[in-house]
Length: 344
Image (cartoon, rainbow, N blue to C red):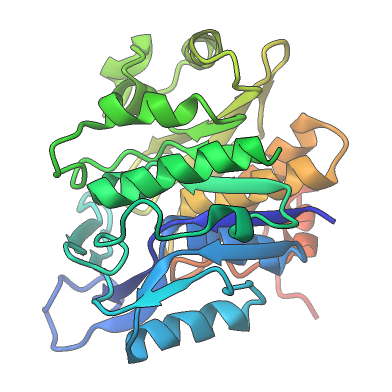
């Protein structure tokens, strides 16, 4: 049975109600989320064994985080608890032409204050077959970047498959190191890269010819084949590259698909037109979780890609960071059942 371990920061998510501006009313909806934790929850919902590694504060908020993850069946025995605070992000959901907005308040969080050597990676990876990380974690602090590099090195030494969602965040990387200075060192240990159309340039310094089209929301599939090929040529250790393709018509209406290149075959998924987005935060993480599940449970990469895209399509209908869907629901959408009729 495959076991997936992920490492990252879990945060308190404070969201304004519905489509309100932040502090429009004196109410914020409090939940938890974080890129790698979102992947673990997806995989646990699909029946996979998962473990989450992070650093949480020794207080009621840290305890609530652990309780939340345990409730989904995620193993949290690898979580380090120490004095400190929890990172927070504030979310304002956009509508029509007004984009969603995220404000981070994570400086000085428990994981930001952690340093190399604080986590016993060999113990954390015991019995595991796969390790997942994102570019968000090394962006939050020098200590977190050192821990991230320790993690991928140890994972490869122990024979784990390593996946990394490049996940560039322009509001992070504030401690004196740029993403394109650090991430190439981490990607040298990665087997599966997950990214969007912007990440290759911002995280790895790989120039995509389509860079000028990113803001327009238009896609050129051949250019994505080219950038995936360039990434694999630059990093020979990489076995496959998956690219999510989001065509943003408005804050509520996106077309959603993905492609995957393994060095020989190039696969393009079905495209979903998502016309009434409920919550797109965590959409990329749900794709990552779906891809990891698909690659471990289906006999071909095309089916794995279709599962990942369908899973992330469904995430756009669910409030909160976590994708609360089952394999049967994803497979139903893959087979064409997307009309949303009442199931009785």
